Length: 258
Image (cartoon, one colour):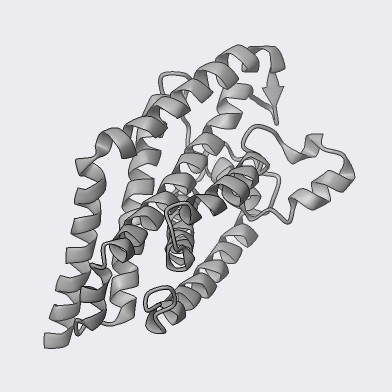
């Protein structure tokens, strides 16, 4: 029981520190995504969407709204953990955690949940902004909440692994710029893959973000290009794999003891 109390204090301390960190600089962490997504709603939803018409049986604003919310959750949960943990490495403060009598899974969980909180908070802000542009109806509340929470966990873990391997601040921008952003834009945020030629439809199925965006769209609109239940299972499997990998790397000091 005493060990559990120590672990709980360590976990809540890391989580509180993470939340205070991004809330203290809210003008850099919460405001920019809100402005960016508002521009997406105005430009793609109103201006371009009025010319496109319907997409998947819904007006274009309704169609892209779930994708934009999910995109904001993905980018912010990932970037929060990457920047925060790498800063701890850079400032050598992570060494104090490593020598403390706290298991690696507690440290990992604290950073990951901090990223989840920021991702979900930004997602909530974007959702509230979306109400100014379109009506919000939820087709399946369970799937909607589950997929966005699991997605935030998955990309928070991904951000942690990125921070472990990064050796400079430039390194933490490589994956978001050259991998995460292209996969997000090609993940069905702005279009249905049913519009693509057969070859590109098949290729799109290898994009994991496609499953997250479409499952979230199913939760809100009831329409999806993929099976949402299969997607949820796949996300859970990836979470287990990446969490195990991140824990293994952390316990061996990968990127921390050079």
